[in-house]
Image (cartoon, rainbow, N blue to C red; front, side):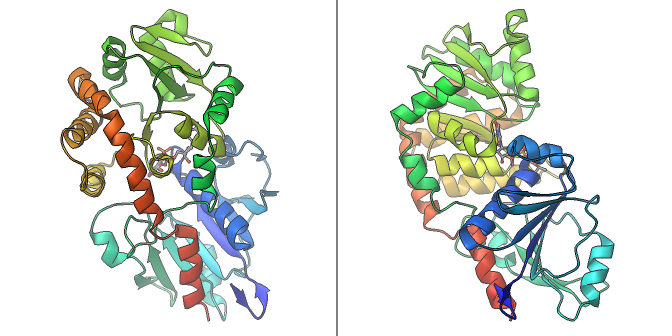
Length: 382
Ligand code: TRH
């Protein structure tokens, strides 16, 4: 991506709304553009503490720093760039600072302005991906770039070596992963739990404990772990555990660096995930997943879940499909009694595992988001 022979900078602008996904997606995209497309990338982000949890090598106080080959600019402390960039990616429609937009409008050749949208499996995404809309006041075109699950969308973020690394994550690697965290490798099925605090956690834990089939449940540090500790009682107020209740063994994990989180997903037999980035990573892990979409007041999260299930379940037969839909529904609707749905889901995990691997293969045939962004920019920037 060059103009006049010099590689032009790609600026990614990210405002952390809440949680980790805004920073998580932008950091992953920045690394892909830098490492797999050799592009100079600046990540402008307003919350370095959140980004540091994903990438512990980051200095949360620095205004500007280089990390993994990416220039990380703490906004607004780092000021604003001269619009030398060839491409500006406005993450999740967060809105660029007005002064930045004004500067862009004054340059002879303003950067290509791309708004990276949230992920959805809904059908309308196909016809909206890549459309442009001018800035309401200035002669600046903006292009809407949608991640997605079809060839008519921008695809999903995926590192070139992700699936080979996943496939090479063998029993020895899995054992080493658990040992590094202070645990023996589970000798029974294992699951990871990453969800929002409003999930029906007590109902889930009770169902897991009462089930006849033993399970190890790994819970990374966060508000959800506090709820799990409370359910377990006084002995679990601190420490890593493990704590046992009936068939259930609970392990407390630290919040893992983003790259290590993939290993947790690979080390488990199925995974509870949420939001956007962990949702995608769990699909790449090729294991059965239980998704809790980020709740939205207008019910958009319910439409997003229905749309994804329509795609994901299109080639899944009964009873596996009924068990998956039933458990996802109970998990997202906050059922007070998850035991029947959990029992059915657990009974179908083997069939769901085969389906999860096939789904990953289908996804891998689709476009990769960073590469499609680069191709899109190449076509637009003459
Ligand atoms: O944290 P999230 O709920 O982020 C959300 C969603 O992105 C949502 O779409 C968005 O609207 C909202 O933020 C503002 O869930 P998500 O997207 O899965 O991001 C979590 C990130 O944290 C992801 O990159 C995985 C990473 N992670 C780790 O790196 N280590 C961990 O131990 C865990 C549990 C997660």
